[in-house]
Length: 461
Image (tube, rainbow, N blue to C red; front, side, top):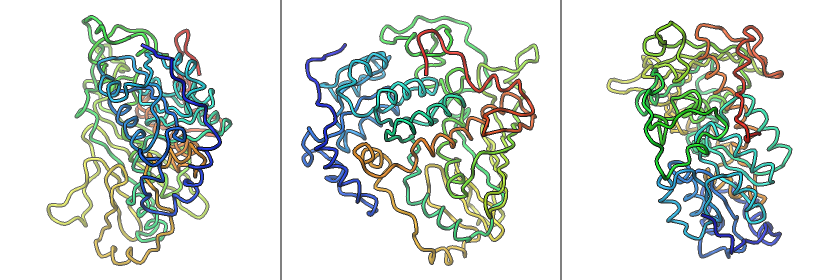
């Protein structure tokens, strides 16, 4: 259903100047007043960012609501499932509705300034690229893309277009993330040589190590299954994929790494200034994730995996080994932890030459081991600019304010690290030698076939 009777004015210089002035000063404050961000009652509708939402159910719907609370004018909404999107459709009755984002971007090109994307992983890149090529600012949920090729191309396109971009790793804006950076860079735990990162999502929130369903239930009348598949090769509909369990399927998701890696790995990458890894190796469970003919199951991700990344020395910083755990696996609790204390269910543990630091996912407040190190940490100056808020950063950037720190120039390389772990799970036990500059696996060239996937006709970057 589409209603084209009302067209928002193109992004005008008056509101650009109004909110750009706000954005220029926003990052000087830890908390920014709502009126600065264009909250209802303070900024005229003509001076608000006109936003289109792709993916209105689940997390995508939450993103749309948050942007609206921060002052965005929701002009158009797109979702392939009327039931899944009903709550957001009803919350913004004036927004024009679409099922195909390609049509929406084409029809609404003159009416929208920015696009937010909250679809499954396999359609992130094609939706984001369509918006960027139309000159729109883009907010995209994590991971940025489904394949390494998509990630590199999307990052380059965003940079060339000069649009404001942000990936949905909310913890990047937190106070905990900044304290972690400041304490580590001040040397509170000494030189960091090893990092452990983990998530409990795989197996707890969706199944892995299973094969494709054998039954063929009917497609719900409210769902456009063809559009949900998007660029991925056809397969019959099943509720095992939609609406929430797609993360565990190779064709649609990127497993626990894609779901949580951009939240968790983000912090050591940022705090330690890690670039691309040179070596990546995965070890995965065999039971349940290997088919009867002893070939690996690439329908769903393994039940559990441990992935090791090796990062080279940078400037005056030593090389770092980072180990990822999923499927219920975790590193052992540090001996310095007090009785009854335990690591978070999703988090990071840094091992330094003078001590240890750990925190939860999404930029949780850091804790030091031994606890006496907190006395020293209290004297570390706050050298980093504080964020007005994750979503606020992007909305301000859309009108000329400072770039969000997790813009695609940062989020792209971060996502590549995550996706290299996904790639390593295709060949467990292979010590992958990665050439980031040329984007290729040097020692196992057969894996280069998985840097991208062939799109169906009608879909393109």
